[in-house]
Image 1 (spheres, helix red, strand yellow):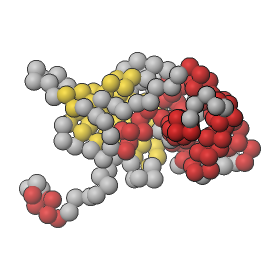
Image 2 (cartoon, one colour; image 1 turned 30 degrees about the vertical axis):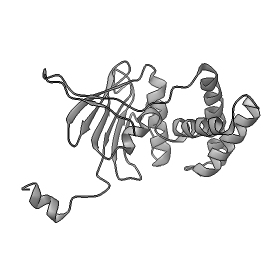
Image 3 (cartoon, one colour; image 1 turned 120 degrees about the vertical axis):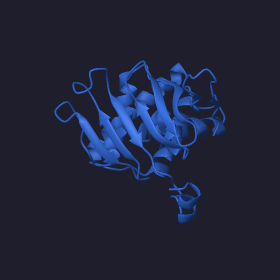
Length: 202
């Protein structure tokens, strides 16, 4: 994963550059259409989980019909994978969740940078800023759907655990006045061994 850690000598918080995929205006319109179709499918089938491989193939087929011969297959496949992350994954924070070097991810509202706590570098400010609350809510909805939990105005707090063991706390208005928030506490894929504990003087 392409990340840059910029350690500042003047005492400012280090920077973490997030690997991001930028959708064009046309791609955003297609993404929203796919999102609506997927939500309709989930409601009609009363689905609590999705088969990612089947959905990926459906998205590729949809793109081939929509874009026809304007782009090659590799482009459509890559676009479909990134759309899948947006639709049933964790959107722009997917790469953060996949980074085993991170211990915590903090989305603190709209128009504010996402912060992370790195196991080696400590607290870091990312270059990821959500300019639309719906993007954060879509991520929260994906987590709620994945964990069979509910979050709405009557129940504006979500406490859940992802498949990888990470703990999630999310809030939405009216509980969080500055917009929806997400905090994810991650755990190492390879837990500490007895040797590690001795080496760290634990």
